[in-house]
Amino acid sequence: MKRLTLLAGVVAAIVSTALPASAADYVFDIKGQHASIGFRVKHLGYSWLTGRFDKFDGTFSYDPANPAASKVSVEIDTASISSNHAERDKHLRGPDYLDSEAYPKATFVSTEVIPEGDNKAKIKGNFTLRGVTKEVVLDMERMGGGPDPWGGQRMGFTGTAKLTIADFGFKKQLGPASTEAELFLDVEGVQK
Image 1 (tube, rainbow, N blue to C red):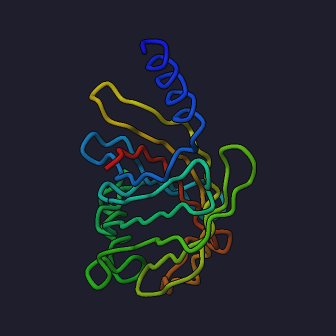
Image 2: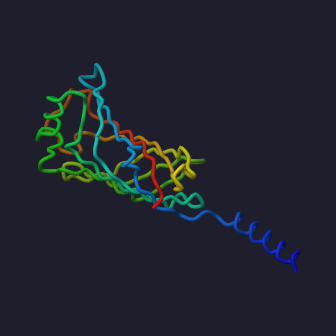
């Protein structure tokens, strides 16, 4: 009888390790701020204007057995822009650029995930800024995942996207070389 019980335990262990991992839902670790959204845009073609958004939130689902079924949703508080210069930030929040009073949120919602080899994917989605929605592609890479010291599960990604500034109705430019903005997303998610 002991032998049969031991055999059943071994078979159960083999079956459980052979089963594919299932999809899991994650929330951005905003509490511990293990996430960031940054940007850069050329200034007059001479240098980079860099900055970040201090307030944002998001969720994603990820299935290692079927990465194409993954989903991402991000919401950014446009008034939280910080370029390390208070007067410029005030201008960027104003009607010439983000118009944060009229459009307090920017959002990204994925529509398709296209895996590109191990741990990389292109994530197509709808990005809405200043009331204008355009398709944007995030080039994403999975950094890793697993248990954390507090008994939870985490997963981390890094990615970039390019936006054509004129697509979103900005009233001013930073010069003729400043037609695109690059976004940088680094996120650690905590499993729900």
